[in-house]
Length: 504
Image: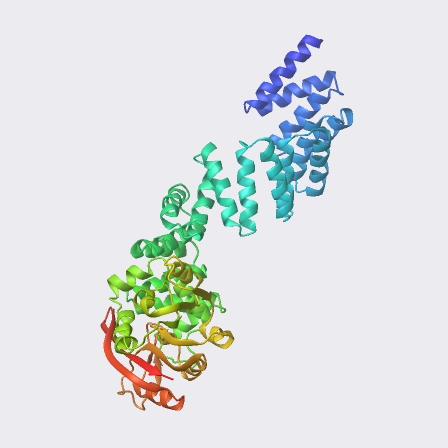
């Protein structure tokens, strides 16, 4: 084989290798090596060809021989490192990527590859730095964008990951991994309208993708598309019956749809799969007629309202015909009109701020506190509150240095059993002659023996008006006004409650 034949053989082998004809390439590379056993490029090409066939035990020795003959070629080190990485020999892969970068700078491909090694080793910050270096060299390197996004996702940095996935889709609009991850990120960021079409695209192409289907259920539920969400969760469980979160979310949907039998079944299964799920335990007790003195667990209340925050106002006003804020304002009107100055007001369990519109005009400074971060985020958008806090209200009352002239607790005590402690805490942070406005759902005296409170199948507590009367007297509150009213609608009809105005 003369020089011209050698060149032609090599060009043919390289062409075959680049065009998927790997076996033909191997034959040609071997023919070259039969005549020229120290031909570094042929050894390198043969090693890559075996790597393409996933025959790494054959690939690695040829690539090592190529480096022994030509140790200063950065591409040889990069490709040997690729083979080591595929073979799970990450330390050796790292060593040769670093050597490739020592020999050649800039080298975006080696930076990207080294980042992948760090990623596989769980060193996400180090990996991210390599992907950033690759992108500084070549901003159009879409796989480095994808890899960097995955690093951010591993660190729960969703906002940082989002633009890189969007960048991937500019170059590769059909990249299923980017579509999937971006859809889940939109869901986690509560951008449900943007999440749904992406997750639906994933399901059309990958119907057994359980986590995308689960997040599609979340997006549908949060967009008030409850029937679609129900079908999403049912399909998740058909694929994986041990998905405890899908059982939990499906149970909650059934409860909204007034199917208590199925709600109980899935809460029981969710708790069986995850005994730390306090919400499932609480709802199991509620649906089986058990009552707890300590009230709803914080995990239950926070999860309920975090999920509910984005369609809360519409659901409460349009479907439940919720009237508590305006009823409470009417109750205090005769007394607020006598006051010559505005009040310092605390809105306990402020939620999305439904009370704010009814009390801003009589508030000097309006404070709000709620256990749900998502509800507080919605309340902040009103720009009606002087200060907002994410906290359990009992903890807030115990720690606050403020004193208030009016405390509002609209639809809050339905998540408490025994009210003595919380009412006493309210008393302590009230100024002299301050007012206390709150609502309860009524428990009729017809229970035998008479109960102070009871946990209902809705997961909410009803309280006996006689119990409230005795507590007010015990804690030295003066009852100024009381009103019985339909405070909301449920599937079974109007919910009757009591509205109270007490004074210190």
